[in-house]
Length: 376
Image 1 (cartoon, one colour):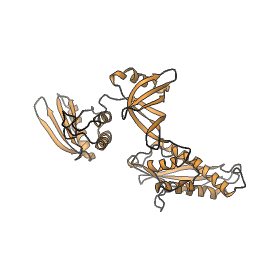
Image 2: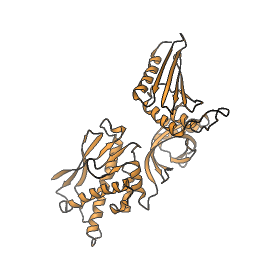
Image 3: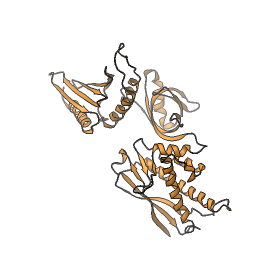
Image 4: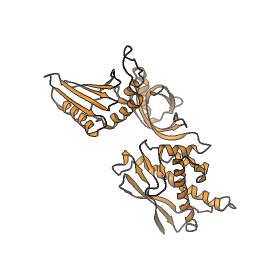
């Protein structure tokens, strides 16, 4: 006979969860949470029964965490503790599973406050946090204690503290995106080398059959500066430097006009880049522009050519359907001046658009779509 009770109601916050949905890739994190929960319960049992060397047989039989519903409020998961009366000691050991939940939440709060997390979870179990929250983005968190006085918010920063609190772990697993070249392929060892755009670091990765054609295409066109976009799980050291790729999920050939790649190149400019004149774009603003361009520019539209401006800004240019189009972006003001010239009749269209306003980005997209649909 099964019985269940509401056990956890973690709330996922961040832009991805505003539609009250959860990407399937994140659900595997909660499978790791179940494993951590059971292992902490076992540890607590042995702490209370030090005359025993191991937990009783059947200690966790019939015990599981199950997702019940997803409620609104960003995205709130209702997780049930399900137990079966067929387990040998389910009732007697129930308190250890409740205490395990408390300890996990207290350990997350301790990490949030930069306190000692090993008061609540032993070092040898902290590695589970390398599997929980590994795909969180900078603006995201899993709040395990919404509405309570606890501050058990798992973010990229807190999970890093939790993982590295173990003296035996030196690397944190994080979802990552890389752009770069493939200068080497070793068909004998089934590996390939990625020359990362940002800093020129080389990473050797395993070559799997599903990615082989794309990797070989990029390798064969290395001299033509053919770049790839790689997404997967990377292992980072405590200085946030990528050490190795744990797994690769997707590889694709980048468009030669790929915006983040071009902005990364331009961010390496220094003051005086134009014959002793010209302000260099600020690196933090270039990173910001790359993100907002990726988030807001319609992916079906042609990519622009990007050029630096003398005042430290960026100008995007298109030649589309008999129109010369420019979008001069002032990064400090976070605004841009749009201008389109119809070469057939010299008509112009001008607009000042905010780079922080989603509606203004939609206006830019719509202007380009209208030109694409027009006749020359």
